[in-house]
Amino acid sequence: MNGILVICCDQKNLLMIKEVLFKLKSQNIFYVENIDKAKKMMLEQHFELIIVDSTLSSKNYIDFVKNVIKVTNSQVLLMLKSEFYENIAYELEQMGIYTLAKPYNRTTLFNVLRMCSVSIRNINKVKNEINKLQKRLVALKLVNQAKLILIQKFNMNEDEAHHFIEKKAMDYQTTKIIIAKKIINKYG
Image (cartoon, rainbow, N blue to C red; front, side, top):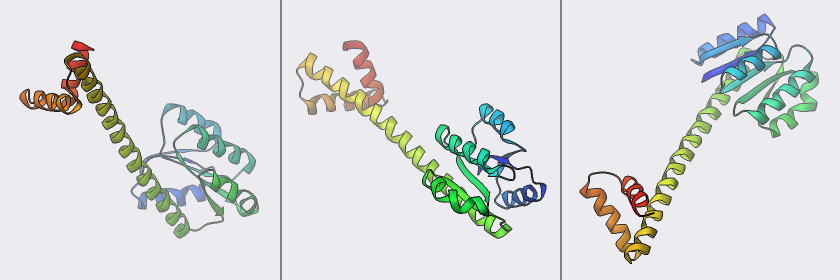
């Protein structure tokens, strides 16, 4: 995991979190003691994961993580005292927030953070695939727009227009997208 913000004011829990993140080979980890400092950090940069150890008033932390999940693309792990956990965990999980009841041990924390890491990797894969598909869609739109121009201006059928663009791309050793852009700029 890369880009983690940890909000924790309990030194014992913070030490355990640091040890587990080290074992997971996490990078770019920032530690703050309270929500206000976390908000300032979040304005400056994006975090893949935000870990919130709610040691003080849990209502403030719950409101904070609900807001974070709505306005960012970050994954959130909220650690709650067990008396609050029972009442709120289901609602938070439905919003996409990971929850962990306190007290917890190293093994449990390690497993939860490992699951967060897997989720982040999967989300990043999906984002990359979406970006690739969006680029392909833009390319298809450009080529189709160029084909339409060739059909209208030069009375070609769709196959002829497609073949024309492919042939020009091969002749000039370039992509169909560049040829399509040239056709659009020249005749569009």
